[in-house]
Amino acid sequence: MEQEVIKVENLSFSYEKEKKILNNVSFSINKGEYVTLIGHNGSGKSTLAKLLSYILEPNKGKIYIDNEELNEKNIKNIRNKIGIVFQNPDNQFIGSTVEDDIAFGLENRNIKQEEMKKIVKEYSKKVGMENYLTKEPEELSGGQKQRVAIAGILALNLKIMIFDEATSMLDPEGVEEIRNLILRMKKENPDLTVISITHDIEEAYLSDRVIVLNEGKIYKNDIPSKVFENEEEMKKINLDIPFVLKIKNKLKTKGIEIDENIKTIEELAKYICL
Image 1 (tube, rainbow, N blue to C red):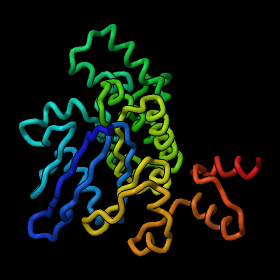
Image 2: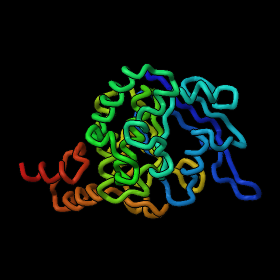
Image 3: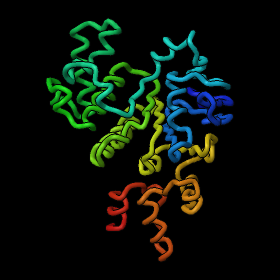
Image 4: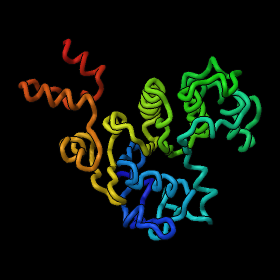
């Protein structure tokens, strides 16, 4: 039986004297799922991220994290289960070096120094930053800073990770770095639940499930192949479909069927060359 770790019930929110940014939104996310939330600018996805991280409080409705209601009373306990990677990598680098930054959360949990060094080494290696431990923030790229932030969260062994537009300020290389890292994290830890609020359609195509927001409401909530099956429909709400899917659709018109599990250009190239 699938276990719900996030449940959103009839969530509504509006800023003072403005129309509703979110209007009666409900959905749930199961343990171990990798779910992306997408939508055009103004669709409500950034507001939803702030509500899930309790930066904002809903006007109406409830959010449950691991069966606990997200509120002032429970927030401290809930934050021991959730890690959040924010949009701007410069704003979340806390330590003076990579090592200090990864260790920050562990120090707050009073982990012994010897054990902490082992944990920092282990998780810096997982994100490919083990050779940068003595580096200072200004020596790193945006993608590298985001990898350090992810390592710091992974080191705390949390149940849920939320990526709040974590690639929107990165160059294409940085975007691909984080996209691949999320997939690797999920492969290594199938029980980790990942929610990514993103503008990256290519990432959404690689996730387990896509929730599409449009004008404050859920427009679609399904597996990627179903969400992106109609290009014209997505264009009506100012969204596109993944580039690899466009190529697959073009090949289909020429009578060439491609395995639906092929989801990247690299995989497509290998498949065609076989």
